[in-house]
Amino acid sequence: MSRFFYYALAFFLVPIYSQSFVIWAWLSKQIPEKSHVLIPLAVILLTLTAFLPFLWKNRSSIEPRYLASAIGLILFCYFLTDPRFPAKRVHIAQYIFLSLLIYKALPLSIGFRHKYIFYTTWLTLLLGIHDEMIQGLHPLRTFGLRDIAVDSFSALAGILLLTGIGFVQNTKRTTEKVLWSDYLVFISVWILLLLLPNFRKVWIPGYILLPLIAASLLWIVQALRMKREEPVWFAFLLSISLTGYIVGANYLGFTFN
Image 1: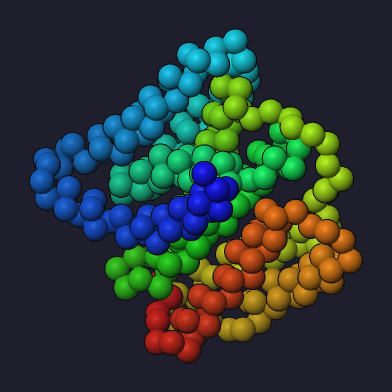
Image 2: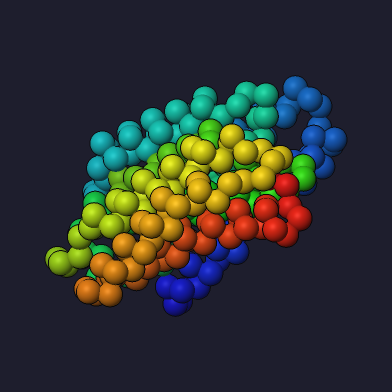
């Protein structure tokens, strides 16, 4: 199956995730209120159970430190979510699964295992940011930094689980490195995210986009001078496309919540 199928499926799931509250609202009416907290827990446990056959099959290649780190991150995310909204804990299972899709989409040319972990986490995190931006423009949802943190740590937990059961291995050496312009884009995205909560239901000033635009221009200049790997281009495109939500909020009649 083509790697780009996994990219396409991951991108397709993001708007589905952002609308999953509809399913939760329906379930909430069907079960007693005291049981609401059990549904996300059950989904998380079912997701982890799906790893057990692979864990047994690859038992000779198990790396306990990665498995322990993954389980620790999942527990951290579980208690990091807002307890008033237990449905948000479903994000943990959703982004573990999303990280698996992104890992399957990455090319073998990435080479080192730590690069698979980095690119999987970074690309999945960017999809989580898009998920939250979509929710920010939805009249019944809100943008939340805490949710982005849960999504990012869950993505990291997903790829660490794969690493722990021996799926993620070094393939071959490559010359690709994370460059200074990559760090600039990464930092500029977080500047945007940290500023956005100050502009709910009001006009979003264009200056909050300047760091991302400037970092993107510098990234393009550097990218034109050397060959960059495919995941780096996807990360860049997912980053610069975040500006579209600000345009939508300001000029297309949406309200950022």
